[in-house]
Amino acid sequence: MKLFFAPWHRAGMLALAALAAFASPLAAQADNGSDYPNKPIRLVVPYPPGGGTDVIARIVQERFSALLGQQVLIDNRGGAAGSIGTELVAKSPPDGYTVLFTLSSHTINPAIYAKLSFDTAKDFAPVGMVASLPQILVANTQFPANTVAELVALAKAKPDSISFASVGNGSPGHLAGELLKLRTGTQMTHVPYRGGGPAVTDVMGGQVPLLWVSIPAAAQFVKAGKLKALAVSTTRRSAAFPDVPTMQEAGIADFDVDSWYAVFVPAKTPKPAIDRLNRVINTVVKEPEIRDKLLAQGSEGVGGTPEQLGKVVTAELVRWQKLAREANIKVD
Image (cartoon, rainbow, N blue to C red; front, side, top):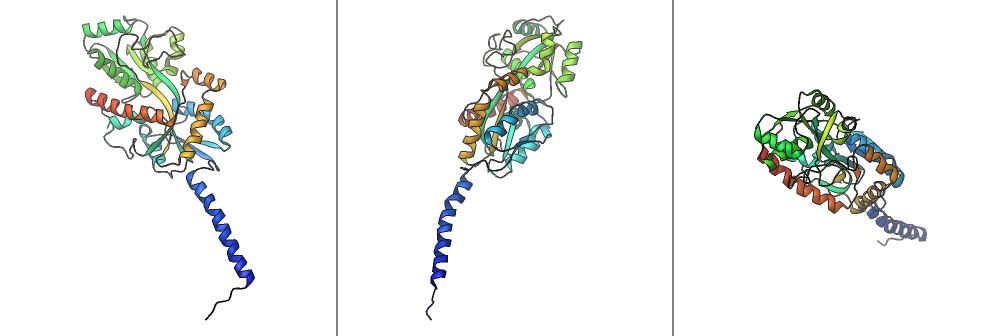
């Protein structure tokens, strides 16, 4: 039996074939992220509202939205030292619409927690670093040491007689204190607190002589003369406290603890989406108004490429594993 196709039927089939041929490249574009973004973006902050990470995220949120042409909505998913929100992003579709805004605990947690529900190295693609925030070593005004050299000499003369506070086990401040002990061969006792406020209060009151903490938590008290600053933890001085030396300038070699803030997406996110987000980050952190707002929080805009952030993550995963092992830092 011969099949007969009316002219209108043949024309319809040709039209459908043409439409399919036209739609196929469009589908490929959508799959590879070249039309990104075409809907709102969820920016997951794995810490509670009002904390340091949330504050920095909200400083850049509005500009992210404006430059991307889509709403960027912050979703606070705090808990388990950032692991709950981080896991959410790791298991989200790799399409660029669920984005992680986190801090340097991203590379610390794998070193101090026995088990995480995600792989920091494999489950995320780096996008770009937003800001750098040094830890600052402050002391009670009556503490006899006024410099890091004097502190080290005092600690060596009286082993285990000096304690230092931080905002918690495994925090950047805790790691900075342990690194100081290792680099100088001294013995000091760590006192973990639940946040910078209580720790600052106790150091000013003399209950604990020293504190490693992020600059915003201590800045007003240092400027008011209620705490004295001995050093900052990064290799560069802080623009917020340009007269405070770095630990390396204070004579402690190979010392760098940076509380950075950065953006990541799930692994296998299309490169066009990553590149678009990265361009926006680099534009925003250079804007004078944003730089001033970051500086008011004690941080400095950074920017850079995804590859540069990736190198930081790779290096810190190794560094903090080594420090946690040598200092026996564990969190249950």
